[in-house]
Image (cartoon, rainbow, N blue to C red; front, side):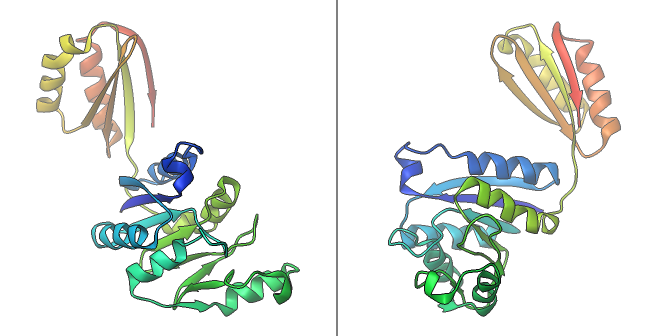
Length: 233
């Protein structure tokens, strides 16, 4: 299973708000073996949201969109997703009924709060008010981190991929000096290799089979000057 994450908000692009949602979602999906192949931030514009969602839903198994939910003038994410899916926004009875069960009367709810793309499944907001939606592999979640995380927990089981195992080797050598051994590692083992320099060089190896990644890590450890080594799945 692969996925893309789209975060919506002018404040993200202006640097006024740090985008922690994308990082958190990527971590959660990776833990479930789902490969995240794109993360994109778009402004609060219907056309931009619709274009990106439409493109990504054709390429990936799931698209998770966060931010811009609610009835205010700049909350246009549902409009953009509806446009991408060729749907109209419509009052969603299940979303309205659930909020009423939580103690909100219709007069309490601003007009448009419970409008979702026609045919969507409502995702209830246990922390806030604005509901999310799921339709055709697109999942729309709130932008408020606490609300987004709580809502994701209700759909977590829908994201299932192939778990990967990872080993980390920290080399006390310049990255440029390691290139030949990394090339040999790739030739010898069918593992993904990432090299991340800093005060030392962190080399991460990944594979779906634990034995393969452990064998590759052992081979590399014998051929580099290691400062520190940590392994984890």
